[in-house]
Length: 303
Image (tube, rainbow, N blue to C red; front, side, top):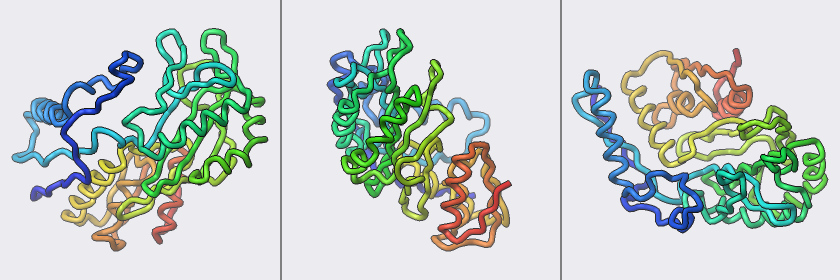
């Protein structure tokens, strides 16, 4: 197989200057003080070392994204108090730390966080107190598509929280005109997870991720790579390898919402005759992949 160049859709070689990190309020980005190019070089060197006995003759350059504004999904813990919520993380004492200006989030996500905080303050619902095990508001998840459309999900503890948010659904839709999906997730258990199994839709059912060759649909609770530009680069690279080999069939194991499978089912933008089978356990991811496949004109079958 010949080497195929992977051209990054965007690249940056500096590092993010974050006032939250500098003030010691958030240390989530562990390597933020290391220049981006050095982080990539270190990871490439590690891969070469680990795979020394199995490495190819030549390594393709890594897919490199921006060092800020790249994350298409925010998972915000709700802290503070009723009428004065924080949206960000909880510190080691489970106090809310507001990170609404976090620089790694996509700009369209940052733009709506103050609106969402204002809305939650108006509901009168209390943030969930981890130590006391009481309160309602646990998390807000926001996912941004390249088009600017948003999927916004609220995670609450009980039916009461769900009922309050449902009753204000019209207000919420007016406040978030770019949201094509709004839902409430119910997580009654006291455990370290980000969502429960029950989801009630207030608007729409799936977010359209309009990529370069295909549109992928994301339903609530389905997973997508958090860096859209790098995901597109990886999808295209794998599809190019598959086109070169030109197999009559292939399997995409743990296919998620079908990104690699659907890219590989289209050759140079055209449908191929090869049979592509995606294997996945997540019901939401399977439904997402089926919607995308049908829109692209493929015969979608579940099994």
